[in-house]
Image 1 (cartoon, rainbow, N blue to C red):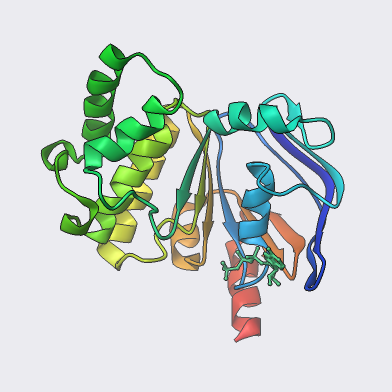
Image 2 (image 1 turned 180 degrees about the vertical axis):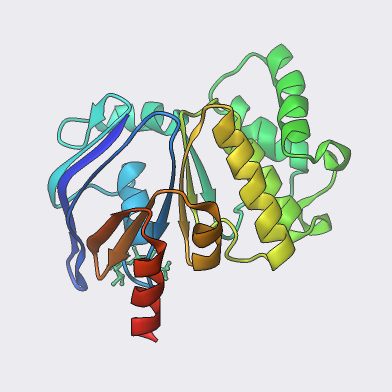
Amino acid sequence: MLRLTNVSKEYPRSGAALRDISFEMRKGEFVFLVGHSGAGKSTLLKLLSMAERPTTGELRISGFSSLSIKQREIPILRRRLGIVFQDFRLLPDRTAEQNVAFALEVTGAPHAQIRPKVARLLTQVGLASKATAFPHELSGGEQQRVAIARALANDPFVLLADEPTGNLDDRATHAIFLLLREINAQGTAVLMATHDVAMIQRSNLRFLELDHGELVHDGTDVARLLADMRGRR
Ligand SMILES: Nc1ncnc2c1ncn2[C@@H]1O[C@H](COP(=O)(O)OP(=O)(O)OP(=O)(O)O)[C@@H](O)[C@H]1O
């Protein structure tokens, strides 16, 4: 479904953001991506959506390879991915339902299908009662739910979430994490970047740990992660 083979990414002025990264993610998996600030988490997610290309190595995702994908194929790939950001990135002048509908409109989905699908998605994320609210009328957690509904609009096989709980308090963080687990239980793979070691500890799920652009752990060894994080303080 998704595989990186010896992927490195260098930026002209800041040097190597990722060094020789190899891992695989299977269909329907839930995987955390963890590491200190600047470790390369966002860069890795940008490579997965082909917003950036590796400097060396190969990334394969949903049948496309970073070595051969054509510019015109990138929108096709993106429609198969759901992307969620820390800062929600909703359109401020559109309601919750219009934000979700927009993701379907741009793909040319038939009008008759859009309304019921948007209603279904907002129900799935627990926001049916706020369909006509504008982003500024919603809490951070609610805005992130709208963003997740929008990310799910085109039935992605994987959700790439870049610190989706980074702007939320503990309660909203927990609720968003439970929602992502529910979405995962229904078959969508999730790759979630986070700084939240306690969340990883509680969940006992696979995590990828980046340190200065290197993949230093791929597994479930939380004791090691805690020691690493303490060591860096
Ligand atoms: N567009 C860019 N141009 C140059 N350097 C970049 C660019 N994007 C990221 N970098 C560099 O790559 C490294 C990794 O950054 P990245 O944003 O991937 O880290 P991160 O783990 O997501 O950090 P954070 O947790 O703070 O979001 C950093 O040294 C950063 O300065």
